[in-house]
Image 1 (cartoon, rainbow, N blue to C red):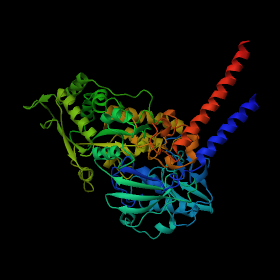
Image 2: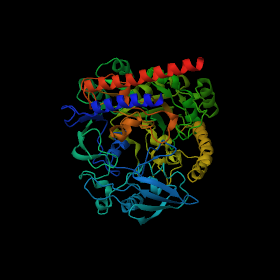
Image 3: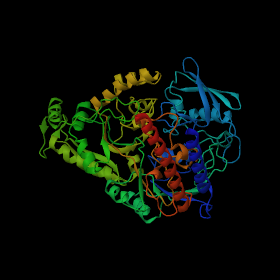
Length: 605
């Protein structure tokens, strides 16, 4: 019986493969996707990115460049440029074996020299890019590299680097030595198209308008499924989703606005795929500016905010309320019992005890120096949900005698307002910003974000938060094994919850809009969203995007098109091929059902 069943299934699968594998005249035409991104990223090098496309900035970079491993959200990242990495006894040295046959976009072979050069170059360029270079200049500090043979490199660190495969292995873009060894100032290297090993080559750059990318025919994981990508810069979300509805773009990399979710779910032309990036939106305090340098004041403000109401009112329920411990609840490093303390009465009592018990003529509480508790919040003018969120928080906080004023600014102006000359404290009060998975699953993210301002990390540019106990825990966690690090992270998250340098407003659901008629191969990759290189690689079409080990939240990846309504000319096959494939699946299912029914009858008898 088993042999007959296998033969039947085999016949049907061969039939479906023949039909689906036979390209129609239409499918032989070059495929082209237009994707709306938030902002322009110069020439997409790790040193010139503007973060204008955030949270998709890293996704754009990795269309062009590759890292040694893939997916910082996995406990065991998937080998990518690397085949393997082996540590020494104390994790201060990692010997990395590289893939054979990888070439750069210009045809130059990729070797261990490129990896050695990349780590050394990032170390020399400390401060050139806080997003990437800090992974080799902060704790644990990279010290040297040795080329063992053309495909093997040994990386040496000044202290244990137990999570090397995750960070920097699964994040750091590897650079071509033959291009960058002559670049003395990478921050000004913006005119030349980037050269990487990634699945796409940049062939066109129009400042603040678009990028043109072409598939890398020689990509080591196979030629990408889509021939051309046009990344169209559309900062305004309303304009981006209007373009999606009219067909001017085929996908928008930002999350679908709550008010459009029902409309898209009922649309025959636009579909929604769910695949969270582990994103978050948070309100940051300037913790170096009085009176916001007082943890009691920050905590009272946090207690006066109803985050559940924010999610229901602003996101229409399409998300989860923030946690006082900051880390995304699906992160492997998150404390399991984290939450948010909403207690307006407790907030008023805490303010009274902390010396904010006097009231001014305008009804606002007064700081000990007599100034009113009135603060300005910087918000991107292109983020209407963030603006509405701050407005709602302002309404809530009025009941405890604190006033928030929304100050919308264009992203460039907002970043400039957050900066200050060396040695000076920034003048802003609070600001709102979004983050993606990197901030929540990087084992060292809490160190980088919240360690006291100094030579390491970039806490000074985030909040300026200072806590000696937190610093000691963060420094110990940076060199600890995973189990010990989990315990240290729990203590660090509790300090963040108690002293509130940041208030996470929400963790939005990853709902992304796309046109199935243009492309329905999007992978819902846990922690990566759907705008990821793996959405364009054939090897993952068969596996549904699943890696060697499930990532944060243990969510299974799948092709978005599997649940989407089929549009005209969808995917790479004809409608006839899809019908035959469906018939093939049905035939297999019928055979299985009959066999199982007979087996069940035999067992019952």
